[in-house]
Length: 314
Image 1 (cartoon, rainbow, N blue to C red):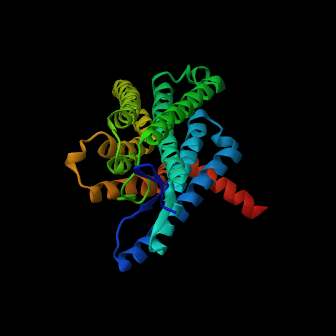
Image 2 (image 1 turned 180 degrees about the vertical axis):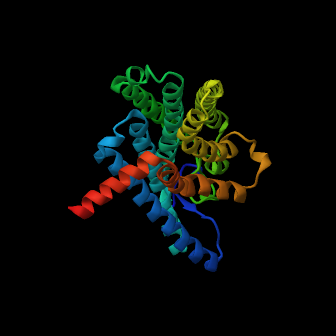
Image 3 (image 1 turned 135 degrees about the vertical axis):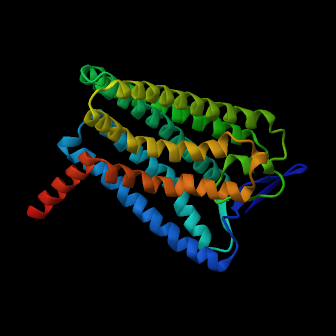
């Protein structure tokens, strides 16, 4: 049942996700491609979490934060991808009102958490390069537990701002969401009530998180760059740069896409462009992150070889 009659209004109880395309051939191609990407995402991020958990060489704050980044990537992709794959196989993909709220909240929670985690990892690199002698004391267990507390609390509060705002929207007309998941912007367009405040609050909270975390990252890397330029040893400079390349690559991919979606004016891009960028941000980036860290990090590659060698030998 898609709607309930309430007085002079028809209250929507479910939504139809229109998905990416209606072309049957393209739907099959996208299904196979995204399924493969999701399998790589799940295996890659789970492997990262397990490797960091069981390899004693990786029991450092940076890798502890990396394991939580892998968890956020896994959660972000899993919030959207399974339902999107179903959308390719069925003629009409229905999602309940509650299911839509849960999907919206989970995407925002894991996405916001990733912003905070990338900022925490930038701070970790700042401490490691700019204050190496104080690193072990400054980045003790209590510090990164506090960083994680702020991360998940910030993600939870931002998710609450979206879901509460969503609950204040009244839907009494069309229930077709022109997207492959319950994104907030197309839901606001379907609302038949005044959406001024419900639309402004999530924009403010998500915008604030992006700006604050980006400022932490930029300031951290400015200090890192100044410290590296002061180094007299070429080898020391190369080593310092190499510890930051993986994180910088992930930051560029992640913040580049969310800036396009949440910061740029909606008039600057079409709905189809928004779908493509959202697909990259929610499906492709979570697959790339473990590959970037495993392929460009010598400690990760070394730990993986040791663990594989130990299992084979055993």
